[in-house]
Length: 255
Ligand code: PEP
Image (cartoon, rainbow, N blue to C red; front, side, top):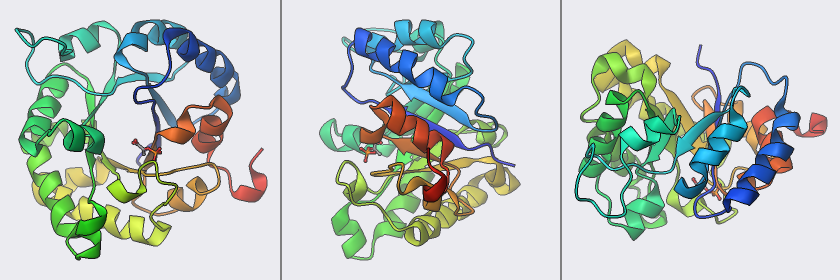
């Protein structure tokens, strides 16, 4: 049984004060939510104070990236040791914005994921094809390659600690979501790739969908058998909107 994992990726949004105001408004809205894991990924600058505000709430703290090395001369970078020190239990790695804007490679993502696992931090490893790759019929090859290479350093006994986020690039921040059927098809494919690497362990790996998830479309996505959660950007910035996503009630029951 895979526990659904609903994660907010705030990207480069929210000062410390704004993050704390979010937590104050958000926690009462998800109090009593059972059987769903909730994660907030604020920017690095707000991790410490957000972590303090979340203490005892059951909502987990995540970073949006991490360096593969444990320490050293890497100006501007943040290590897994530092994230562990702040109480992060998850970290997003390989987000398409970092792959595109910072030229991050699958090999680098694999290094980050391996380092995080050594520090007891669960990596949320992002994969996803571009619009051109989808239109040219290369989406499955691209995603399969990313899964293989980005998880190359994950030992089989750690499989259940990783999360894969399938985020088609053309759906991120565009308002255009993959249909539940298309998303399910890719998630089932990702699980096949995981099974080749981890055997039966693949059944325990949570695969999130990301790309313009909103309160209005989350229920249909979460109804798919291989969609185990959502990684949410824009719609996670508002406490009410993200709380509705976390609860993923059928549209007619949505509060
Ligand atoms: C993301 O950046 O991970 C994301 C899915 O963004 P959005 O929900 O805004 O598409």
